Image (cartoon, rainbow, N blue to C red):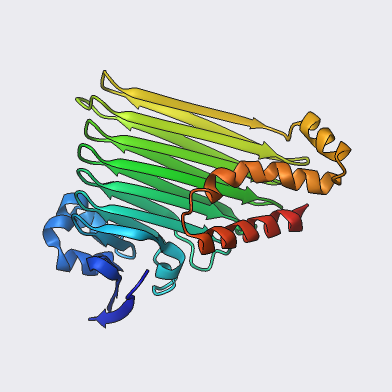
Length: 303
């Protein structure tokens, strides 16, 4: 984003972005905005998650460019593994998280979305630590009416990586909309688990909530578990979820090979369809080209 500057105050960091948007440590944010902090976090929670960060989007703020979480997190210490994104009323923001290593990996992201706000989130996860189980949580709280959240997530797991990805779309008010797509490519010896939950609270009519998960298995000894969960406590809602896990279609692979492509080239071309939905979500050509290049490089390296 434009006009980024960094300041420090009483051992607490704060990173100012444009249009009043800023990132700070949770403890510092609580001192700046005690009333807002109390709305989302009680005192025990603030002490427990003091190492978390807050990305604050003020009311009526429209951010046209994508906010890159990787650039933001680089300004904070390695201990801050949780991010809380507070999106004020009638604000509009686009955020992407492009992970190629775990040096500055955010293990949990929580969105709090107020009335009339709109959030677009894109996550691309290409590398994980092979030495341990990695858990990533994405929690979406649609707090007030007429808010909207759209999430598109793409993962590649390979080697002996063991990944657990959990998402929650929590509708706490009526007239709200959420859509989440998560696609994963799992290579040999990898383990991927996905748990996606949609929750619609009582007296929350006119809610639309969608969730879609597609997993492609390549080679042998791959374990993929996908568990969609619905908890709906209201009537007059529209809620859909789907999940599919399988291998690349052999007929499509054979067809491309008859057209002169090698098996590797055919595999790469078919796998591009798995992440096209994510690449096409970027309206910034520079970001789109960078992500596309890195995803292709990752796949070619593994194949």
